[in-house]
Length: 184
Image (cartoon, rainbow, N blue to C red; front, side, top):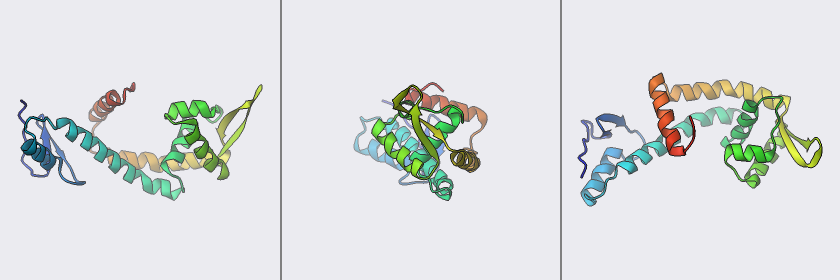
């Protein structure tokens, strides 16, 4: 059976001697205490870790939304535009390549592309030599929007991560990548 240190503050969680302040929802400390009281044979640490990840994700989402709203974008549209931009202005991608890169179904990709094409931000054209296949690229307006939006996007992310130093950021990236089964 594990022993847990609950920390000094009632609304913080202390796991392995590291205090983690929580500001959204019930405190993880309280949730852990409740589970330990109701199910002493249960180790709820994984619930605290997953809860902290969910809460951090919500905070990140909420922190990026004002910048997206400024450009009338949603997260799915931003994801498509950023994927195309990081691939290179002169390097169109097929919808299949994009959906694999973004872990989406091709149906979900089609709906996203339809919305962005209607706004004049992307262009779909037949692949040379195979008219059945399409290539997607950013229009000049799409490149301009991404390049303009990116400054606010990076600034918002930087603000939200400002409490972490470079070593902590790399550690967090490594740990989260292990959970996501990704190579950081």
